[in-house]
Image (cartoon, rainbow, N blue to C red; front, side, top):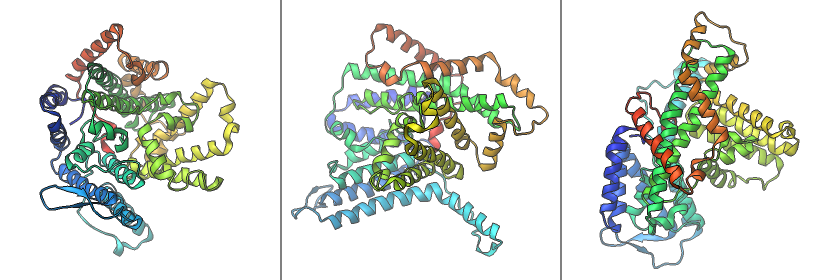
Amino acid sequence: MVFSSQIFIFYFLPLALAVYYGLPRRGRHLALTLLSYVFYGWANPLFVVLLLISTLINYVCGLKIAGERILAGPASWERDGSDKPSVCHQKVWLAVSVGASLSILGFFKYFNFALENYNALFGWLGISALRLETVLRVTLPLGISFYTFHLLSYTIDVYRGQAKVLRNFIDFACYISLFTQLVAGPIIRFREIADQMANRTHTAEKFARGIAFVSLGLAKKVLLANPCGKIADVVFEAGSRGVLEAWYGLSAYAFQIYFDFSAYSDMAIGLALMLGFVFPKNFDSPYLSQSITEFWRRWHISLSTWLRDYLYIPLGGNRKGVWRTYVNLAVVMLLGGLWHGASWNFVIWGGIHGGMLAWERSRGKDAFYRRMPKPFRMAVTFVIVLIAWVFFRTADLPAAMAYLGSLFGLAALQDGSGLLGGILYQPYYWGTFGIAALIVWGFPQTWDWTRSIPLWKTVPIVMVLLVSLAVLMTQAYNPFIYFIF
């Protein structure tokens, strides 16, 4: 189930809100958990079993790290009478948590990738006897990358003493499974909403701002991301394309992935507000960035800060010398690329960003484009991001290299490639592309624009909501890019 679907907007959401507000406070987390399991299991009920197993493992690990034990009676958890658990004891249970979570993620996300590369390696070496022939192919559960990061941040923060353990299993299950952030983020750390899990306020102002977030997010998704996605699909799937079409399609993909993901984040934040939760900002006009370093302060903020706090800093950050800092940056971004998908293209995408982060850090203000005027710095950064998006969008390395050849006029044009113009240069697509560019570089973020909602803002919010719903009723093309991660 996706947010921008008729079944979610017209059926699931009204039911969820009616149940939530119709129950006393004590029953709301249980209701949210059950509703979230329905939401998550809509595509495949077996995914719920895996989510529940992961939740149980990390719930127990969190309790053990904090020094809790189970006593007689159904679900009666109390503090052990002994002293604070030893560091060794805590490390063992943290290792269990991290090992179990990463093993589950690794199996379901990377089994097929590892098998294909294993067989390719021995095929290349001519040792066919060592190839593994199996009919087993693993289906990737929705959102497993996101909820795994939620689980890891919880047990790590409990171990570090940065968060108090949740003794109530229903509360913990609610935090992990909450449908507003379950399948495509944002990555909400437990310590960011721990107080809200215990006590949060429900106000008309919050609810109204939540509606605004959902309305504007739905508009970004349906009115901008989807049409830009059609442009990108046509160009990327073409047998050949000219230089202009290649840059047009790549820019359309950059707009699609931004509006697609920021729209989902907006709707997630808005739905959370309607339930009383306040989530942090996840995007901050990333294409206004004047360097790749700045880009990662603005793009998918919940992921970049997670990688910084749970991977970059533990690796040593910038505390172990200059060269170690560069290596840490590269390793973090390579792993960040692999987190997005089981493909060498994602690793290359992460490598481009990691290499640029290390290079910018090494050059400081001497980086050549940092001496340019602001518009040129933004343009250079955007072009670098575009080049990296080629690897993110294409299915494999040959397809990426072919597309790069088209960008720079190095690819031979096939007969009929001129027909692309008949599809791409329609007023509808040109107009949508132009509006998308205008919003990217000229409009504030939803987070900032909705801080206050006077009457003059209410009118356009209602209008775009109605238009979005009308278009949604007729649109067949409605993917969410980050659902596959």
